[in-house]
Image (cartoon, rainbow, N blue to C red; front, side):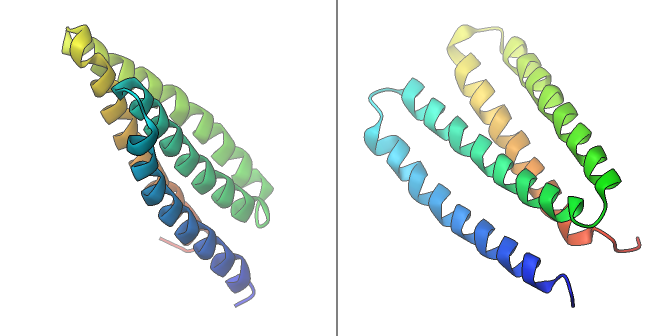
Length: 130
C-alpha cells in the first residue's frame, strides 16, 4: 500500500501522454509539408513515448533499489543501440532507397511500442516474485 501514490501518479502521467500522442499524430499530418516532415514528427513522438516510460520506470525502480536502477539504465542504453542497428538492417534489407525511410520509421515504431510495453511491465512487476 505504501507504493500506491507513485503508481497512481505514473498512471495519470502515462494516460496524459497517450492522449497527447494521439492528438499529436494528427498534428504531424496537419502541419507537415511532406512525408519527411511527417516521419520526423512521428519519430520524435515515438522517442518521447519511450523516454517518458523509461524515466517513469527508472524513477520508480531507483526509489526502491539503486542497483536494479543501474541495470535498467544499462539495459536502456543497450536497447537504444540494438534497436538502431536492427532498424539499420531492416533498411539495408529493403535494397531500395525508395522504401528505406518508411522501413526505418516502421521499424522504430515497432521497437518503441514494444519497449514502452516492456518498461511498463518492469515497473508493474518490480518487486513481485515470478
